[in-house]
Image (cartoon, rainbow, N blue to C red):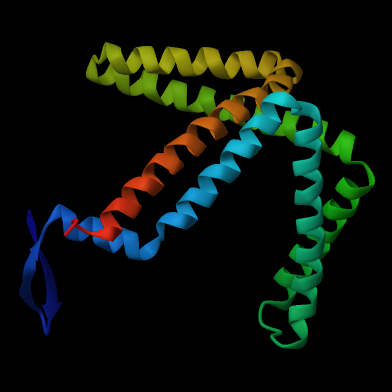
Amino acid sequence: MMKESYVINGIIMADEITTPEMILQKQISLFPWWVILLWGILALIIGLMFLSYPGITTVLLITILGAFWFVGGIFTLASLAADKSQMGWKIFLGVLDIIIGVIILAQPLWSTVILITFFVIFVGFWACIQGFIHLFHAFSAKDWGTALIGIVSVIFGILLLVFPLISAALLPFVAGIFALVAGFSAIAVSFTVKKASAGPAA
């Protein structure tokens, strides 16, 4: 149980006591339970598709992403008719989105391989950087737990960089597992939110 406060003319005013039930009620007002349920079901479907048809599903999602970029680029350029602010930046982004979208739509298979491999390489570099940062802090603070995290991060990053194509091939399966976990979690949360929104039984 805690108190909320707000400032009026530089004076901190105490609000009414906020309970965990009130916090949950605020969260319920943001996301209805059926929206969370639909999101969970969609995540389950995507997860099953990734695990059952990893190649086709990945290419399909990249193609949809390409179509999204293409349409987004057209709308960005069209918006200049109504708002010419930051024209140069909008033209650059709009043309870039259209070019990338056309390339993906024209060559969806190769675009998928290139984008997934680029993503794996990016994650590999990021994991190495984070690992070295953890190692630096670990040796400074003599924290062996942080050092272990750093070593694991560096090894993980090196593996991604040395075997980018294999990592890219395994990525759909990892994404599928994460989607299934997220889907089941969202469905469980949706029923919890539904029960809380219904209030106590009479």
